[in-house]
Amino acid sequence: MINDDPGARDLVAIALRSFREAILPVVPADQRFTALMIANALGTAERELAAGATAEPALAAAVGGLLGEAGDLPALLPRLCAAIDAGRFDAPDRQAALRAVLKEITLARLAVSNPKRLAAEGQGVGR
Amino acid sequence: MSGGGKAGLDPDRKAALEAWLAGQAGARSVAVIDEGRLSGGAISLNLAVTLEIDGGPLSGRHACVLRTGSSSGVSASLGKAEEAAVLRAVFAAGATVPEPLFVGADPAMLGAPFYIMRRAAGTAAGFRMVKSEEPRRELARELGRQLGLIHRVRPGAEGLEFLALPEPTAALQAVADFRRWAGRHPASDPVLAYGLRWLERNAPPAGDLVLCHRDYRTGNYMVEDAVGGDRLTAIIDWEFAGWSDPMEDLGWFCAACWRFGRNDREAGGIADRGDLYAGYEETAGRRVDPKAVAYWEAAACMRWAVIAIQQADRHLSGTEPSLELALTGRMLPEIEMDLLRHLDGVGASL
Image 1 (cartoon, rainbow over the protein chains, first blue to last red):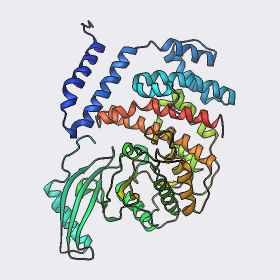
Image 2: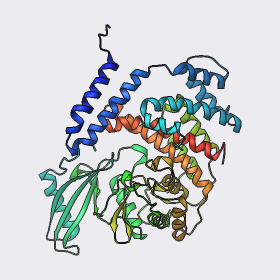
Image 3: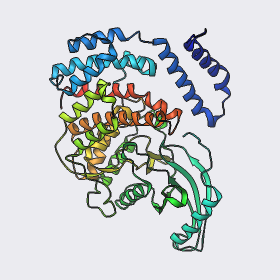
Image 4: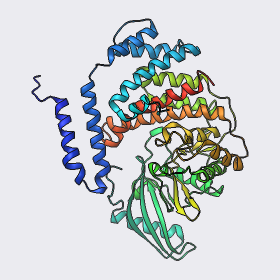
């Protein structure tokens, strides 16, 4: 289909900005929790649309390195899960290498879902 | 919390409830004053009610909570009549919990089973509980003592026959439950796959089985300001209770996901573990096993992860569209990061 401008990311971004500036300050107290959840959901959607698949090649390389295989991330993740189930990462040193890559993957997801927590991780206070 | 503020009882149901309560209370009459919904709980409906009982042993005014809602199927939550039976058992054991007064097991009356308990004063909100200049050491110690009392309820206790015993051990039963609840997700989410495997390979052997609350954490106890400091008024939200390893509740209380950002206070964001553990050992009749607690902290992260998945599925299935449930699903990365950090800390194996 033909997508007109402005696109989804821009629309969500401007909707969130308008909501924060014009609506949130005048929302009654008993609706504030819902209003904050709406802002949270729009913010997550905006970040997801902005990020796209930019993090995937680096993560695919890291997962591929663990497995000794090549492929894109959606193909490699189920194979990593199967390798974990099969006991290929049971040895302590293999677990440590696995956890390092799993943290990279999880940080990329946190960048979308919870940038505050991501920042805390960067400062080492997330522990 | 969706639909917060709505009144809970329509007039026909209220009349039926009042007549039934009069019979239960051996009273001439009972009036139910509906004071609206209380916040809290994505699963249950809690209504503040005042009962005006005329005649019988409970004659007088009683501030109460009417708790109802269908068992959601999320993580083996108990039905309301069963939850009331658990509450009765821990009340009898001397724990600070609301006394259950009336149990309506017949779903016909209000649309779902319900029970009515005394209303406790104070506040439970987790994010407020952790906002104190000084750690709340005496509160943590008292919560330890309370948990020790709760854990005195053992399999065989009267009225709790409906609670299944874990097989083959508490830990392996828990991991099997997590696998079942996680559905297809561990086949494509390697953090879940790793966490489940780690829990299976490091499961502690069979030990004592006790009544575990299974959601014993900051946010699920109520505190009011009193002269000389905090006063614990009630431990609430018993819908996940079951027989398990006593260290499970300590691990849940201390898990990173229930510190509300106060990671410097490992006992629920309110104090050090030492205070909680010392209180526990005063009343439980057993020592805290820190290694087992560390195992159950990893299990706590996994349990919370699969609950978040289930909450998101309730939204995604279309049966219960809810922004709150949807956003709970997007908490998965932070829960998984807590698990990974914890496993970094305990090393590859216990």
